[in-house]
Image 1 (cartoon, chains in turn purple, blue):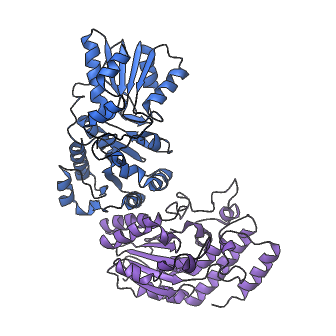
Image 2 (cartoon, rainbow over the protein chains, first blue to last red):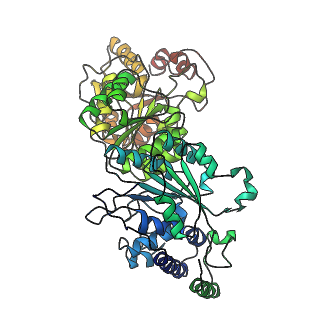
Image 3 (cartoon, rainbow over the protein chains, first blue to last red):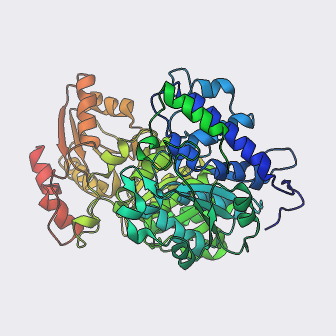
Length: 280
Length: 304
């Protein structure tokens, strides 16, 4: 679907600029990790390119510069990447992020409704997609032309409530929903493909439920952008984004403990070196 | 009561384009047909998917709409409980969760269809408001208030069908958050809410026939509870009787006792609730209530 005349969106998505931003965001998250005991670093690194692509490539803006579209982080535990992007966009301040998880701060481990740029409290999994459907229906009724973007974790797709929403989004014709599954094949207790082999294949499941769905390499910003821009637009759209949990830091990649843990001083230094050398 | 609910909601929707109804394969009869025909965009049937019913309602409210989520009480509150808590109450959204056929009204459908702990459960959630109208007229007032005035989540506990009108000549109008005297006396005050108010009215009639001066009040707003109003009732009557179709915990009975303690009330206080037990009986609504000790004869004898 193309942007309407009244809305503004970049004509082309600069994948090189996206890589530079994503490196900056990963570095910022790594720095914040040194202030706290835990922050779901692996989950944020997994969906860094996805959330960056939504904010910097896909979301339409109104003529006054405000976002017309909505981004809802359904996998709330990945919100460090959203915080860093909101900081970059000026919606959150550096002081907000520096006070992360402290008594004086307003940002916690999960996104909280009411904070700037945060449209829903999604600490509990399986809530986001239904809320996205409600938002999409409201936008459609009001003929705003706005889209709702959301990112789900693959673990979250195991929630029955997610499938209720998958069924309803297509049954109600919510073609203004673009959702991503951060398909990193890991959840707290291990590899999803080991614990839930029947979870696969994913694209076919969403297609069978009436969505348009494609699988895309989830750390390839250009591919993510193209996939969404080339959708037919007559159904809700689900991008199954193949990702690596902890992407960018060797000892974090695909190691479940980094779902939640913060790096030690030495680990921090190694991570910083590896991020600088990161090739995508 | 559900017919008057749907009529009131339809009227509200004709005036306010932000009113939506999200139902889970159960539709209130009467005016809902008009609603769904005239406003198909604002009548959403999610099917048998109650978690989605609440989540979609939350999403609509996050975009400025005022949705009503509607199904049988057990399925509107218990099944999607975490969505009610997180999506509606934590985010403090103006969504009305309608629990239709609450209490033991579905008397032949078994315990899976009874809500005997809904006030306690809904009342425990911060931000949640609870309204339980006692007759079709109060249901209209409550529905209109939820549609036009409420700024946060509300659990609207309503009956099913056939409830008698009890408030036509009420001594006071319906006001959110205030107990409402249907008649005023000085000896005995009977407090109740919801469709069981009919039994409270029967009891009041009997006492009056015996020459007592009787108050009868509808405690339609169960949260925030009108503590001052109840304290007044406790202060100004010799006997106060609470009758409710709810478990002994978390409803009107224990809260009235708490208020009585707090104000050092001098009156006698009698409470009649469902027992802390599931109901395994079948039969009429009255049959089920009687099985848990709620019948006018027994209550009348107990407070003599």
